Image (cartoon, rainbow, N blue to C red; front, side, top):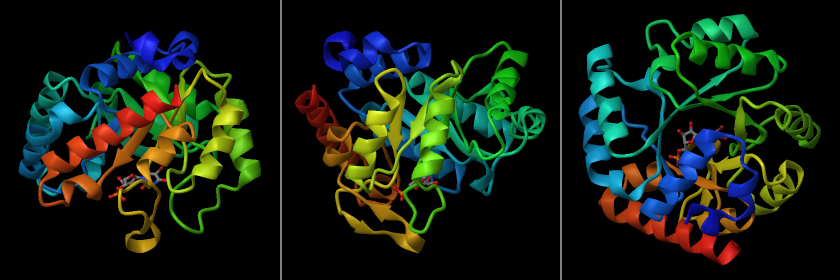
Length: 264
Ligand code: 5BU
């Protein structure tokens, strides 16, 4: 079923996590990753409870939670796993390989519960090895999403930089895929052409209300993003700040799923 729906993205994928994501997306008919940017544990629990069935992955910023404790976080991760969600820590690592490996442990112990993490390639390709070593240190596996583009205005990830990230990242098995800019379908299409079919492209900067967001965030249309080659729309405030997160999550799920069917 996932193969039928995802076509070449499925047949050419070399990452088990990418396949797992595609299977979940088909089961839930949703290509939505919720950016769960709430700063209390209760807020996060409420969110999973409400929107779990409509999303395929959960993106976290573990360091922005005011009342974080290791115990509450492991309960939260269990709840996410039970709801069939991939857990994606948007940590945006950027240091040298060995330090990044150590940053995967520490107080938050990201290596123990994350399936995916983000990284900049600014320090060179060893960052991917550092992250992969951290997962293998605890007998787990995971995937790295490299920032090839960003959604915020004035960012410094220009064409040349994007090309370098893609050509280096494509060769690394530990790279699950790339972050593309969901607010600019044209840029996204160019990114897909460079990436090919093997790796995923996940896109923040999408909202049904297209336009400028807070503090330099930019939003593009979720359907357009999928049609341009995104495999997952990352939606934050469009869902968690709405009056009915459940209803909105279902809406984004439908839009994303219909666009995937239309694309393939
Ligand atoms: P929003 O509320 O839908 O704007 O939230 C977007 C989320 O995606 C938020 O958690 C950001 O940290 C994240 N993000 C982004 O907005 N733009 C980027 O280029 C990257 C991540 Br990378």
